[in-house]
Image (tube, rainbow, N blue to C red; front, side):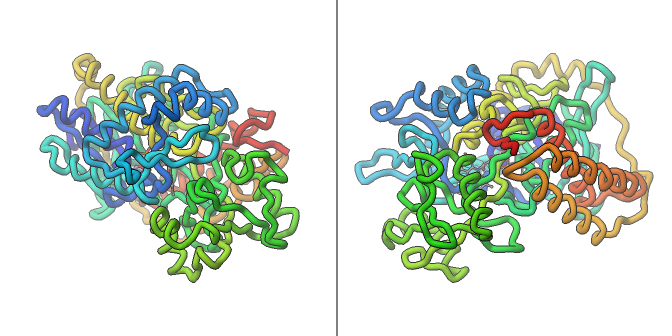
Length: 510
Ligand SMILES: Cc1cc2nc3c(=O)[nH]c(=O)nc-3n(C[C@H](O)[C@H](O)[C@H](O)COP(=O)(O)OP(=O)(O)OC[C@H]3O[C@@H](n4cnc5c(N)ncnc54)[C@H](O)[C@@H]3O)c2cc1C
């Protein structure tokens, strides 16, 4: 058993923002950040396009960013949350600049602001097309030099340590050291879920393998309020490369820079047939238009055409895409690139209030695993890094304020013991995970209907019952626990999709 003041589960942008803020404010308190893989294996590392924030008040305003966010979210966002994220987000990106994140600048030395779908002004701060990696490496470096932060890798959070029946209190987490295969109980005054996304519930996804919805599933098992799981953003353009997970993302900024979409059959530019905003329509509109266009012609993909942007512009602004595509045999200046929509972002999750507090005392949630009310029925592009920054910071502020009250509540706990010892067959877990993903892709993807959702519900219940039976008699492995978590996430998606009868935002019912 270990005891710390703050336990942060997840080393992405939300988790590190929280950890740095509390550690700097309280140098005598111990902050432990755990992550199930290596430190930077997180959705945050893969973010390409950038962070949306109002920094140029000649071209932009808070009001415009607020309105764009509300429109993208079909006005199902919480307006108070939208306002605070937009306004405080502008300060949080200034913090990043002060820390040394090298956002791209124009020749005149101003921030080079990108334009993305749904934004009425250029406001995306970026570093080439590897913005997330640039931010995360600066934060990780800082965290490693902060004496009271300990970062433990390959430590998988299994479940939250929660006491109380009605007034539940979180006191840490049970974890599995995946290298030594030993169990470890971590008792903490404050626990933060910053476990990122859940899109590995689909086989076609841009999310790395770690995005298995563990935080959402753990919180749900512990009795937390989980909301809006039906709103899943499918990124319109991931590279068509069957069998490869995660799918390589072709950033929206490429369309912002002028690339267009053509159908595979006739190479016809089709987006204006669906929406007057053409290739810069919001992501859900573009993803559904592609889905329609593929279905209409029986094609497996559509093309993105960036040939006219020119070699220099492509290399300057999209070096990562140019390089990766080249390795796969595509030259963006001469070739059309085959693309398909892929599951990309979860708007729903563990409900958290404006301070990041969940419905369980002393448990905070921030970043992609949280539902704060910012996104409503759809996320405006590049608002998620912003949300992770703002809520990581807010949760830290609140937990610092609450700390003395929290510590007086916590008592010593029993250590975790493992009764079951039967090893689980890895192949069985892989097979069930494959079946789960194919059910979700077939029945609960971009376009849904009630019959298919019910069908999915039935099939998921069957796999879930089998998995629970295996789980209780087996020694936990990471893949078995992830399967269990993905099943919980999948069932929550179906639950919420069935409850919302009308099509709105990312939830489209036939
Ligand atoms: C390809 C791609 C491109 C994107 N581009 C953009 C963009 O341009 N702009 C934008 O705003 N957003 C973008 N996003 C979304 C954005 O990256 C994420 O929403 C955001 O980074 C989430 O940050 P986070 O800190 O909440 O989670 P993450 O960065 O995903 O971090 C989660 C952490 O939790 C850990 N973890 C998970 N489960 C466990 C467990 N059981 N035990 C221990 N550790 C665990 C993971 O290992 C990881 O360290 C993109 C996403 C992807 C995948």
